[in-house]
Length: 294
Length: 142
Image (cartoon, rainbow over all chains, first blue to last red; front, side, top):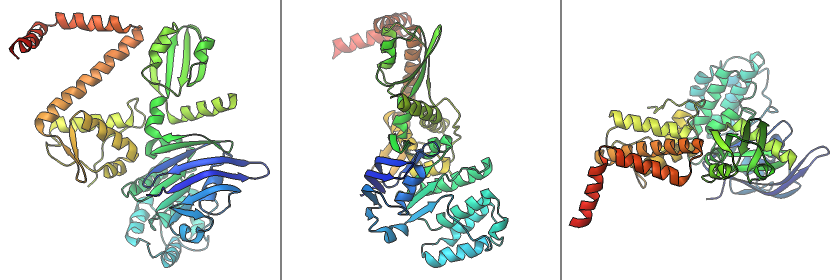
């Protein structure tokens, strides 16, 4: 089966920013989390996939079809949510629901009702009275009730209070039941991504700095504290992304942890005090700092 | 029906290992009986709000230790009682073995030293002479 998303050598240049040679594949039925600082290129990437902007070069394939040629057909199958989507402030949520329903025959009114309840939204209220969180949830409701085969969600949980964030994650989790549906979402909140994504992509300075499945990603990163001194040989070990010295201890962060790591450290005269898995946020920050140094 | 497990994203135990532990606990307590179907990978992922790949990994681990069996196209089931008991004991052994290895690593213990210590402890334990005899017996009778 063709992947939900396939990017090969995609480039896009602006005056002050560029995406460089992006290669990225999202198999169908999977969830990919996109992590990056502001200005890393996350939104640009999502807009390319939605056909809102055109790549300068490379190939963009979405749901097996080439963009921009198949743009119109593909857009119907995509649910795209971002900050720049506007709802009509003077109209009610119900008016918006009826509008989407008239355009998309796939509209699932029963599921829309479930989401109304879960998101605690009032369908008869005009959008101008909605808080930021309610507007985000309203937009997601309008998208999710269409059951699009590909969801492109740009920071869906940013600016939401913890309760609303939980409600949105709950709705995203509903999508996991269907093996034909895929999600690409970006977030500042790495905890959201760590929890629900099958694969993780780090974007930095318009480049993909890492992209792999989450389980092996988390497995390979460890923070190790040893007794001993940091030598150049230690810093030169493959996978070592950070070394901090605070006599008598040395702290290492490695992205290539395996069975041989601890024996190697011992052979260098270090005695291992503790080995901990690292949260995604720490892995991200360490990777980005490493790419600056490289 | 929701098949919620009680998972914590803040635990130092990785998510997949928490799923393994809790399925094992359900099987041991009899809440999930031999032959009972498990929720599908996607159902469980959706209900627990964790990624599909994480549940997949947990199920593979449970399969490898014999706690569950997966029949192609039919899904996963709790293994028959005997296999499950043995599977649980094996899982317990593996986790204790890992703990031993971790402790040895912290001491900077070399492979030979570790093996010697395990050998000595085995010989000194009450059940040891019997099981060594059994294995020699097997050699002579077979």
